[in-house]
Amino acid sequence: MSTDECGTLPLFEVPPVAVPASTRLSRADRQAAGIAYGLHPLSSSRTVIPLHPLAERVAGAHGRQDEPYRCGLCWWLGRPYGDRGPKCLVNDRARVTPGPASDVQPWWPACPSWTPIPGGGDQR
Ligand code: SF4
Image (cartoon, rainbow, N blue to C red; front, side):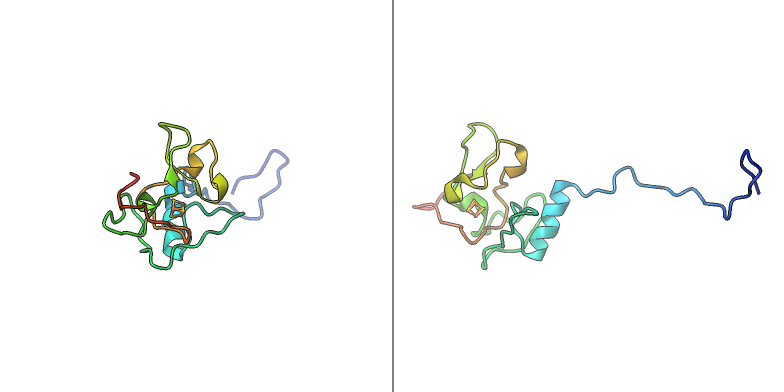
């Protein structure tokens, strides 16, 4: 057993603990967990957005492209910043920020404000 420079003994030895480089979940992981729980990925700690009652609670890199109740088939999906990521323009653009955190993935399950595109079509 070792002593410190004053000669005192430690109460107990503390073994080294391996700490992962990052214990935080990625944004995609948090969104996937939220979808499984019934939350739309645009939900935040301040705003809870439930999923559309008919939307599949499917998360993943691609989701189900044949699922009709998804953001990519919603009239409110648009590109207010040109080539940058698509945004949800519902409620006077209340969900839009200039950064990537408010980018919408077309495969995301829809929220209750989902509105079909007149004549069908895909906003992807
Ligand atoms: S309004 Fe449309 S684009 Fe916006 S989150 Fe809901 S389903 Fe997605």
